[in-house]
Image 1 (tube, rainbow, N blue to C red):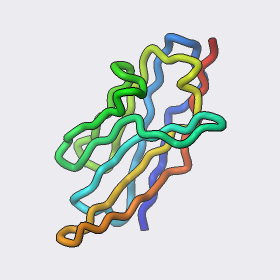
Image 2: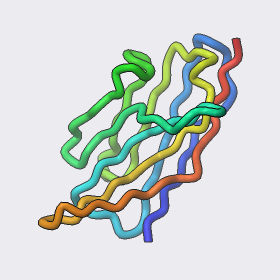
Image 3: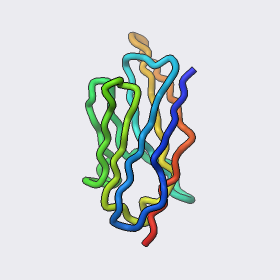
Image 4: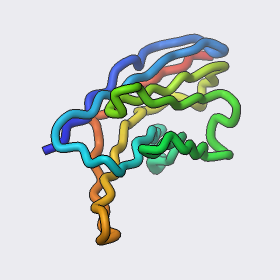
Length: 122
């Protein structure tokens, strides 16, 4: 069983910053990808950034380009997302995601946190 717990969301004025954290616990495979997705009201969930177990990072170029920084903790089971220069259109639920890679089989299994709300006022 895997659990993902997010924290750090909140209310901020446009131009402000927030730091989100996600802690994964349970049976975590050595090969995995952890990431942050967001879902604005009435829109589909979309990738913000992801980082794999070798600390290779992928940012969704069209999403928060240059304004989001993802990092992984030394324990490998925590990730953070630093959000800067926030805009009202960044408002939404930010979800932590963990994709476990089964070695040798190509199979994957995805896990999601409950989400943390980010609200940016104009």
